[in-house]
Length: 117
Image (cartoon, rainbow, N blue to C red; front, side, top):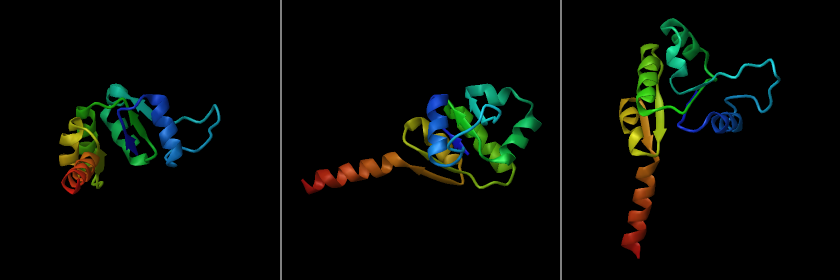
């Protein structure tokens, strides 16, 4: 599963790159890639069933969408992990069972560079 703020085509390309989706697909294959609130317009039971299937991508996700998805995964007794690189990811990073901000690494690297200069 992947949650991203990227556009749908970009998200699908990344999902293929990391083997969430197959490298190629035929016209009959349905890729489970939901944009924005599209997923949340489905009935709650259908949402939970889809979350149980894996290999799903959420694109153009807003911070509140990320938090809601993490809560839903946790309600299914799944362990949620979240990575992020922006301030808008902070609430979901804190809520997830495992959260890692990439900005911390970059800031620390630049801090070390500045004191070693």
